[in-house]
Image (cartoon, rainbow, N blue to C red; front, side, top):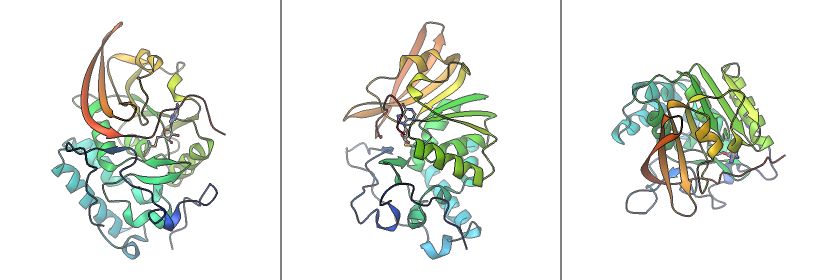
Length: 267
Ligand code: SAH
């Protein structure tokens, strides 16, 4: 039997009734299709009974997810390999495990979400393409999934989460997969970055602010890349490359919808 890795750490929880209580997977940390409509929900890969164990069945579901990511234009083999290895279903509540390999964001409690697989693949690919970053920062660890994917091929992964309950959930999830020694997780306000650890070869911001925080732009190594969703009701992924000590180049990528980047911490 698979033990529940994520017992609901919040009143009510999401659990099995999440979709029935109106959570829309298109709400957060998701790509908006070019027509403006949310990406269509894909059929479930396999029934929940088949992925109850961390075994062959979930591996097969992950294989289908990887195939879909390739069809959606993700080509970086390091990222695809890493996503093939990380069991995304162990980062969500047991009641949502059957949906873990759909291309959807899912609730993780505290009003936050685990990012859509395409979003994770796109963001990591954009900052690692044609380069070999050693020290990477993720702002907004959530349940720790993206950090686990990064840790598959990045030597030094640093991660910040501002909600204590999620920081603890990420710790628990990463520990269960024996990744806790490879990911340095901090509880704090990620808009400030980690000045004592900087510079970073790559920075991924997993929540949307009106503007990319200046502190994070300053903590990027020259030649390094940062990716972040930017905007309020209309958001886009922005890819930034630091081209010199006082110069940054910006490129606008896809339209997305992310949870908000907030200052301060929440206990
Ligand atoms: N990386 C996650 C996505 C989590 S959702 C994944 O693997 O799927 C985004 C997270 O950013 C939320 O948990 C939210 O609490 C967090 N967040 C928002 N503002 C933040 C800030 N200033 N510092 C750190 N975390 C922040």
